[in-house]
Image 1 (cartoon, rainbow, N blue to C red):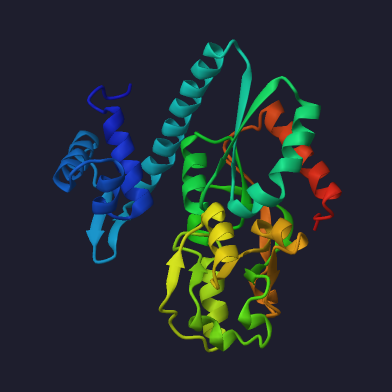
Image 2: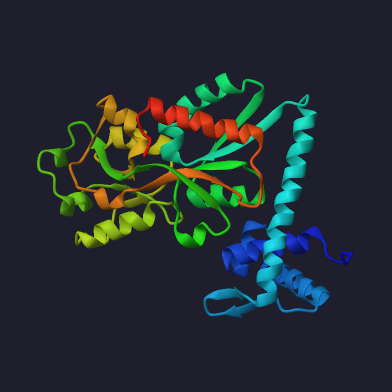
Length: 306
């Protein structure tokens, strides 16, 4: 029998602390004070009569009991979210909703065609598309707020508990406006002479870009703006001399229309897989399977299949 002293706040706080590996960061995300979240964790451990987390210099680490409890705690949160979503769907006259997260490169390049294909295959399903950075979307997937996520494969520590099916590959591009002075004499060592729009920490391509620049001897970039906003990047790059470091899918349309140009740098080593992500402990719904079919149809139309 479940101990009635365990409340939803205990589960939520414990899971968030584990994800962030920090009581301070978890408290900020849950809009709590650090003493409050520490008290909640202590209450949970006292109820369970077990130490779940150990604090250390790196933040916190799970004990064996904590590892076991985390697995089921995450499943519980996901189940609650699914229940809330189900109630919402019933309230919307019973129309089924499919929620999909799309990283910026996918949202710009692939999703318009996917949406058209999906509506032809399954017009009675309401499709909700959320875009954002990798970490944010994967967390929403774990919580059950999203049914699927489509985007780049993240670092191993961000992909724990996530099933990934590769669809195609893409690389990073260094993009500028037409007529940019660097196009006359391309030189990777000179990019620091202009503002650089850079992938932020937590984005799937950040480690790849960092390693690429280090490998080519490019030092710290002083005029660096970190963002994953495609809307900002498109406007600012076309209106200035900024250099935008971004996945090729985000700017594929702009390059095709010659509104922007990719600098002729060999970024082959930044190539990485793009795929469909879901929770491995959940059987895909018929709508999710149809969405996968729509994605494959779109990839064929756009000639992107691996």
